[in-house]
Every structure is written in structure tokens, then in C-alpha cells.
Image (cartoon, rainbow, N blue to C red):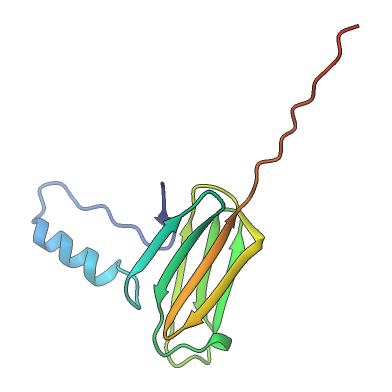
Length: 123
């Protein structure tokens, strides 16, 4: 499964000290509020992300094609913003979000491919 964060990118230079590369990656390019867990089934992706101290009404979640954007409103005591790209279109109608004990769980439905194949009769 291909799962790439959209807002973060990091490519270590060749020959650079690996411990310094790990420090940079952990310090600047890791999720702001903790670990991100991704699970996949035939029908959906499930993302779990730690967002302590953030209330339901302070979260914004947007789905656009293959990208899901997460963030907090300007009035939130803790600011958070991230975007993740999934390998296929997300079905916004079957997508749900749940915030419980500081853990945001997104269930992102997979959009079913539309079959446009038609059989043509030979005369």
C-alpha cells in the first residue's frame, strides 16, 4: 500500500551522517501530535492519529480526491495541520470520523471504480 504525507517531504543527502538525518526526520517531519497508524481493508482505510487537547468542534477534516486534510481552527489552543495522500479516490459519503480520548479515528471509504464497459452486438 502506498501512503504518503503530502505536506512533509524529506530526502537525505548522500554521504551525510545517518544519525543527523534521523534527527532531522524525527524533529521536523514527524506528526505533530504523535503516531499515525494506518490500516486497510477492502472497503476502507482506517487512520488513527493522536490529537490530545483538541475538541471535536476544533477539528477540520476535508476530503478531496485522494487527499485527506486535517487541521484545527484558529481558536484552538493547539494548532495542527497535515495532509495525506492515499493510493485511490476517497468516497466522502462513506467516510466517518470519531474523536475519543484524544485519538482521532478516520474511516475513509474507498471509492468504487465505475465500470464503463459495454457489450456491442455485432450485426
